[in-house]
Length: 620
Image (cartoon, helix red, strand yellow):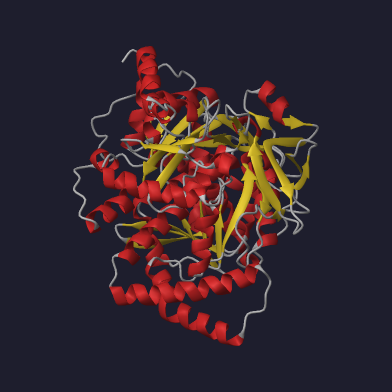
């Protein structure tokens, strides 16, 4: 399918007309996956689009959508774009304060929410947001007592659209013909670690060329084979939007939407996807859960597992070194995978994954290596919303962990400034930040995006991450360190959920640790450690000793100046909904310092006398 100069609605119309009875996606309802064909998909989009237009939606207006992925989320997004308007997602984990800001900043003409939970986040400010015409609720269960003139149901909007079509004879096609591939299609609000999120405006062509089309350059079988994909990230994230909304319009991809993201493991086992995408935290968490299951197995099973892993790891390292693998070792590896590793992957739904992608943040090399050793060809993707998604991608085929991959060639081009800053140009370059001209000009210069991160090209042609220019810390000894590098080294542990490094102006790096409650609690049960909840477990001396050992392992791959010399375990789980992290689990370092100031300062106190001075200054 030719994507050049076309809009997303035009691609949608072509697919619906070409294959009306073909499968568009599956969604689970009451425990059963239901099929939605393109004909039905088109009908829903048409009804909702005409309904919004009848209610007053104009080209260029903004529409906010909040909730987990569901059929109505998909219909609404495409319907808004068909009307020439602009949609944007709000993360379901956003705090009420963030929701208020996003609706106000985007001046949403309509706000669409999945259910009562998200409606409650909008209602307190609905009267003061005079530009919001209606709050449209998809699932109204539990809202029978709600009485507000702006509240409408999703079905009411569709019925309004049907009546307009009957009376005027209008069709969705007439609106689609007016869309422009170079106009703004949607806004992605990127997570703000130092303030509120900023809105990235992307055109239809930005995303169709630099992500949807470019992806096929790295994953060629997506054009020639049918693939199964699971929708599990927030639709407010550019990665999920592309995989769940736009890939099926262009490629033979079947999207499966589970009943809830909380049941991802169950969905994986049922669907057995062939293409799986996730942010690093997903890969880390799944690897940790698998590691726990292995430790709970019998001694004989662990022996076979350790033997299989040893063989697979030897083969993997030979691949990385481009060294010939002997017939004998190949045979052993086939037996190890067939008898041990493949059944293990089948049990977690990853046996038939042809393409596995990690994007959104740096992937710890240790996590990538363990998945590759198990037999999953996990690759690292480097990108940014401001460049339409993709910048570099590792070539599939079990690449050596550590690199960001090679540039997307004829799509987005990568060059390095004199100071090593990564500069990107090409068809994916965004149109600017919504209502942030000054910020736009600081990032977008002469059609090129300055990423704010440094890198270097290796002899293999791959890009290697350097540091975030605004995230460099300088110790009191004058040494420059990159906290992300340290954090990724430590986060390779299945027992550690999050690492927050502090070193600016300090004698050495120190780290706050958030334990992974699932894996650590399982470890505690095996080791007869008594606890009553997260806090008592996190503060247990045995757990401290466990984490100390994991940090020692992580320190082995760091230079001496980068090694974590002190750590403290935080007594609570970080919660995005109360603002501890961004909705995508990015750390707000300043906020974390304010929250755990005593713990941070305690890491750098070297004597009792110094402790007394600090305590006096803190008023303790």
